[in-house]
Length: 280
Ligand code: C2E
Ligand code: MG
Ligand code: MG
Ligand code: MG
Image (cartoon, rainbow, N blue to C red):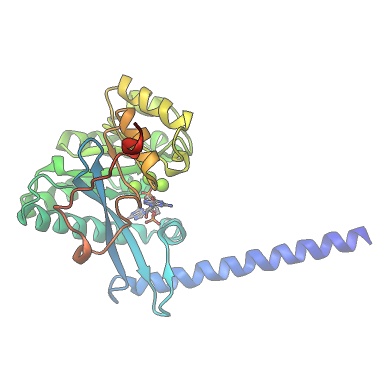
């Protein structure tokens, strides 16, 4: 009896993993056409200076609407594209597109607008990565400092000599390096000592205000002379909490969710009435 139950459970699990596997294979097939069919696009989320509510830049985030009009989030398809190798083509497209958008906004008057681009560790394994980025910047006559490369902490980076070399080349070129989702994954502090990161991005999972982890990461970042960006700011109390800790920058739905370029107002300034104004 117990044996049978066990076997049934195992079969159920097997079916589930088989259907997951089929879904992955489907997505890999569909991803092949995604770029040429114009199915992928970038949305942009403002990065806000917390002290004055001004937009200092934006983060480019991928969106994919496949041929069945299904919207597939990057958290699902990026790992698949990394596994299949398609991340290289997609990643190149993202960089080209985001750099062009940055140029458009700087020429429209947001002269210091910075563009944050998420880059997978698989892309950093290409020894020509920094050369290709540098060629794009030259072609667009964009200064390297306005490009912020976001890398999620990942053990693969420190263990791969080419990745480490690429990071140093990018720093040499003058792009800024941001350590994304800090505190969620591998969190090895030797990253901060050995690799040329300029900015820590605190993961949104630490965001409910008054969180000790968020304040500890901010204090540590200050000690290390790194700038801090908080992601996932959804409430005014969270914003004020972070501002009071001198966290310099933030992103989140309190300001704006990611939007297509046509809906992005580069000159917007976010203002909030202090919650304390009602107090005598
Ligand atoms: P990430 O780089 O940490 O991006 C932040 C995520 O938080 C985004 O999810 C953003 O839409 C979401 N977010 C922003 N503000 C809020 C908020 O106030 N509340 C909540 N609940 N969420 C907020 P998204 O766009 O789904 O992207 C997920 C992840 O996919 C990104 O995390 C990044 O790791 C990856 N990704 C996105 N675009 C690219 C890309 O072009 N290349 C690579 N390699 N990865 C990308
Ligand atoms: Mg990011
Ligand atoms: Mg992040
Ligand atoms: Mg994240």
